[in-house]
Length: 598
Image (cartoon, rainbow, N blue to C red; front, side, top):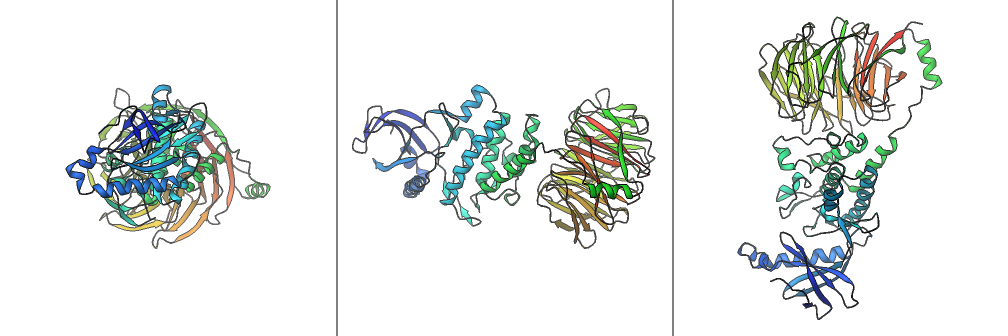
C-alpha cells in the first residue's frame, strides 16, 4: 500500500505531501505536522512484510524498526537527523524525523565534482562526532556513504540520515546481523551473517566516504578486494590529496578490522595528528649533535649533486661495482646513471617494452649483470644492465609489485606485492618456485639474509615475517610496530634485522629469536627507506618528513640530519665503499651525498 497526497496519519497529526523515496525495505514520505512544518515519515514497505520469505520474521522486523527508532531518538546531536515521533499506522511502524532542506553529498558530487580536502574533512569530522554519540548509545549505523549525508542549504553543516540498517552491537562480541551492505563502503564483516561487531565497521564506511568525496570514485568493494582486486590509494586518482590524509584513509579501510582504528574518535584523532605534522619545518641538528658529527671522523656529509627527474622518483639502487645507479619514477621510466658524474647513460623500456604504470622498486643482481624492476602494472621485468635489453616480463602477481631482492648467489629473486604474497622466482627461467602466504595486507619490503637461508618480509599489516627459503615455512612473526612496516634489511652477519615504519620509528630485532633489541626515534613522519652502509658503521633512514638521518649502528645514536629534499623521500642506497649515498624523492629529484674528510 502506498499512501497518497492529502492522506492523514496518526489521528490527523500528519498529512502526506508526497513520497520522497524508497529503499530495500523502507519507504519515506514528506508530510506536514499540525503547525504546518515539514517532516519526513519513514515506515516499512507493506509488500516486504507480506512477502512469504519475510512472513516468519515479520514481528521481529516491526520490533527491530521500533527499537531502533527509540534508540535513535535519544541520539541527540546537531549532525544526526532528529526523531520527533514514533507511532503505528495500519499495523506499520512509523518514525517521524525532521525535514532537512539541502542536498546529499552523492548528488553534490555528481553535480559539482569532488570536494576540497578542507571541506571534505569538515563534513567528515561532523559526521564522525555524530557517530561517536550513536556508538555510545550501542548502535552501529552500518551504511555510511555520501548519499546518507545531507548538507543543509546555505550552511556548511552535514547531517547523517537513513538508519534503516542500524543495529545494536556489543563491542568485540560475535553477533548475528542481517547481511546488508553498500559495495565500496561496507567492510568485509558486513558480508558475514555472524562476526564480531565494533565501531571499526563505521570507521571503514566513514573513511570510504572521505575517499569518494576527495576522488569522485567509489572504492573497490571488500568482496572484490577479497578476490585480490586492488584498493588504489586516493592520491592515485587525485594527486592533490595530502599524503597524511591518504594514509589515514588507507589505514581505516584495512581488510582486517584489528588493523583499523578501533573507534571513530581514534581515527579522527589520527587524522588530526597527521594533519598537524604536515608541512613542519625540520630544524638542523642540535648543537650537541653537530658537535658529535664534527668530532667523528669521516661522518660529515654534504649533497654534491642534484639530478632533476621528470616525475616523482620512487626507487634507486647502486651497482655492485659502485660505478652506476638506476632510478625508477612515476613516469613509468627506468634510467641508468653514472654515479660520479650524474650523467644519464641509458633508459630502459623503449619500443613499448617498458612498464605501463609507475615503477616502484628496483634491484641489481650481485654480479651486476641483471636489473629487476617492479611496478604498479603488476609486472616484474628483467633487463640486461649493460645493454638495457629486456630479458623477460613476469606476470606472476595480481597486484602491485612493491619490493624486489636478489638472493646473495643471484639465482633467486624475491618479490613482495600488494596481493599480500611473497614469491620466489628462479632468475634463469622466470618460474615461480614458491609463494609465501601469511601477510594480511600489502607486502611492502623483502630482504634476504647474507647466507640466503632466510627471507624477511614486511607488510602494511604492521608485521615482519621471517621465512625459511628452502622450505617456504614461516619461522616467526615480529610484532611491535604500530603502523605500516615499510622497509627491512639484514646486517652483514645476518644476526640483526632492521625495520622502518610509518609509526616514525626504526627498530632492531634479533633475527634468530625475534626479540626486539632497540628502537630509534627522531623522524617526524613515516620512515620509508633504510640502508646499512657496507662497512656496517652507519644506518641511513629516509622519511616522509623530507629528511635523511644518519645513525651510528653500534651506539644507536643520531649522527646528523641531511636536509635538501622538499618532499617525501622514497628510497636511499649506499655505495659499496660506504662513502656515497643516493636518495630519491617525490620532489622529482635524485640527490647524491658524499662525506667529506675532516
